[in-house]
Length: 514
View 1 (tube, helix red, strand yellow):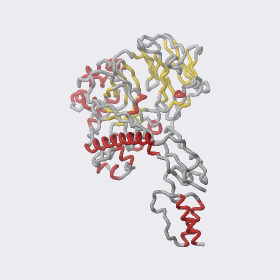
View 2 (spheres, helix red, strand yellow):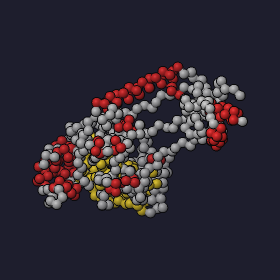
View 3 (cartoon, one colour):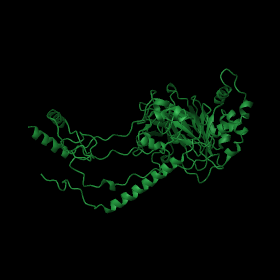
View 4 (cartoon, helix red, strand yellow):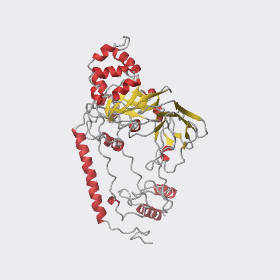
């Protein structure tokens, strides 16, 4: 009996053959034989086909496809969605269009299905979800915005509302309740009706450069004085570069994880050459870091309000001391590098401020936005000390993630790294803006204040630039090696694909009998 049981187990192990050397006929005591036989009867465990991810992926060898994971759900906060009318352009400048901008300032995603925009007479309406192919306007995540323009052949998702010289726009939820309303008696060309963080609306000109716009808004007088004292005012008046191209976020956001590997029954798949499938192309390279203020715009200003500078003057004076005077602050040599950290080359409007994305400032170091609903509750926040200090070994931060090293004590130790965030702090996603977890970030109170040569984001705190950790030679070698490897893989896969015969896959496995 023991012989037949041992033989049966051996045949079953051979059926589940893998490259694992432990799957071979060995002498097994009788007690262990019965235990092993029971395990074999319970489930399809043991040594598995390398194409099978789990033992229960197939039912009795009949191909039952495993359930594939769906797209990751957005991280939600505790505050309900709150959709507001943020900006209306009713008399645009030349070559511009009427605009209606909505934003969700709540911590949870808003379902916009059957919400309605209506003009003053409720004659013309725009109903969300009515137009096929405009599904991108159905869900509005925390901090996200919807920018609507007039309907055109190129933009069938636009509105047919009449946004006139004297008009009103109302927003109703799916139950018909009034959510927001903006009315105006007159409008001038190149202006916009703008909602501020306190809920008030005012008219601002969008036909001025960023410096004049700071002056017109009226809450950035200290910031303007600081820019003038450091000689940055004139540099920010540069015209918009006519060759400027919009930001390609794919160069900044890590690529999504690869899809799960296809799975097949244990007796199938060995004769197929899956190495001929080329790997996905690498993401586009990031543009070079621009240090200093470019001669031509556009520019993005992270503009601290006057209240933020009042707090800042108290911080630099130290606890127990009266705040530093305005004269002291304007004369300190540290003011220039601090202000350079508040200037970003390019037009980084809020839709480009992706969560945990490193954005390099004119100081040459990065500022990192956070839009995680559970962390920021519908606000866009900025982290000024979330930077990657590279490890002293020859591996970059992306490689540390691949080898699951981010949580190692060596990586997270501030003492070992001689930096408060340890090694690879941002890439390993150890930064937070949650005050309960020690986060201290600036909040963008009023995003997307538009001008002719850039955009302004009003923030509630003066930022301090972090240290600039230079890339090691080993990192450069690792990057080059990775690029060379990807190139080699693509070339090899292409050659293998040319050699592989284009024959249909039969339901029978060659060489299998019985």
